[in-house]
Length: 203
Image (cartoon, rainbow, N blue to C red; front, side, top):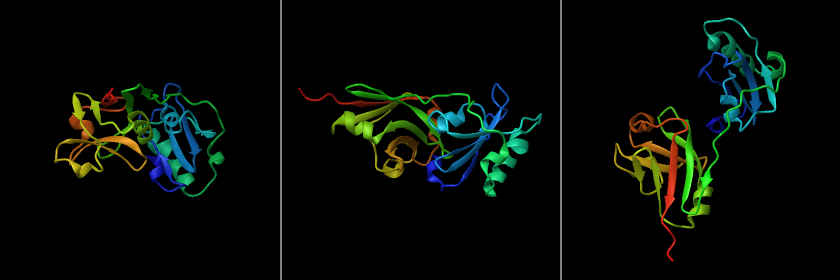
């Protein structure tokens, strides 16, 4: 997650970098961080709908938008130059909205919102939601064809090669494989569904 980096960090997003459907690229400032990316919806996901400070980068025909458009903008920001020097301000961003949690008496349904470089799957299910719905009940985490019967304190709390669920430093539920790549081994990816199911309360 970008909040793990120091304030002032410049993040270059090279995923699907050809400018989206409209052929646009942007630089934004959000919570003290800078991002440069194509207008493909990632910026609205990262900033929960859209940052206030957005500039449109120059459009150009290029075989490598990351090299010729995004990287020079990132260098400009890393050198301490103002965001507004990169282009005109804009409010037009392609919108991709985060999935919302679905909460029931005995279940929380969420989704994978990020896959980190280790292959761990970060969900949008928070510790607060689990504790509020669970009321101390035992729970199991269901994803794909797998079920994990408890939330562990850390990824090494299970045998090598086995799936494990933890709350990370941002207090959100993560799925990993001890000494393995969970995304590859479990066949899960961005937007895959994850359920936390609770034992019924005794009558």
